[in-house]
Image (cartoon, rainbow, N blue to C red; front, side, top):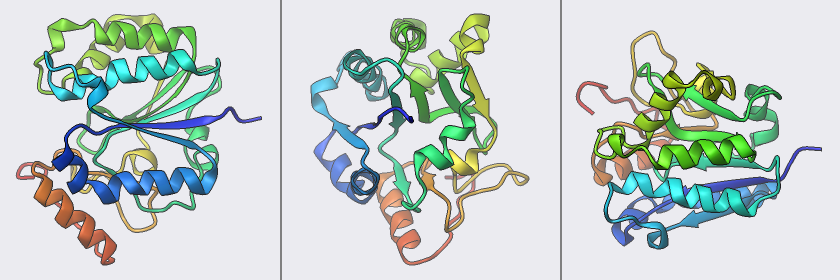
Length: 224
């Protein structure tokens, strides 16, 4: 029996939520369609002493502390739009996570390990890992924020790396509209699109409108 699935997204700021309303709503509709639980967290988790991206770590830790062992959590950034809601996590994403691993990360189209979409099993290691991510004050102001802490821990600790599967099938679970020429990018029919590297809410809104109009937008990764 597949464990229960919770989708968690942190979205802080009224203007931010308003601009990304269609992306956020796509997750609520997706969860409703398949019987998942969707949690959209907000200002209650805002740690004003660190860049906003860090606030999703204590939010995630709190959620994990409330779930049964083995429960599945999909941590998804607010700038992710579900574009094919017919695809179930159990069929489309879970097969990428080996049964002996606790967390699935994606190696993205820009050749980085990206934390925008993560599937994880609730386990003692998972909770401890995120606790240690949260404690990496040396990464507080790095341009990758908590993503840098994740990468550093996996590079520094073999045991951590043994609990994680890093997949290069980003088109299935972290598709971009920009990347290196040889990398596959988002196309209609894909599960989701992550607007990583797109700077400016107005640009994201325009991209969502293009996708809704049936277009396949692209951006230059060196001039997003």
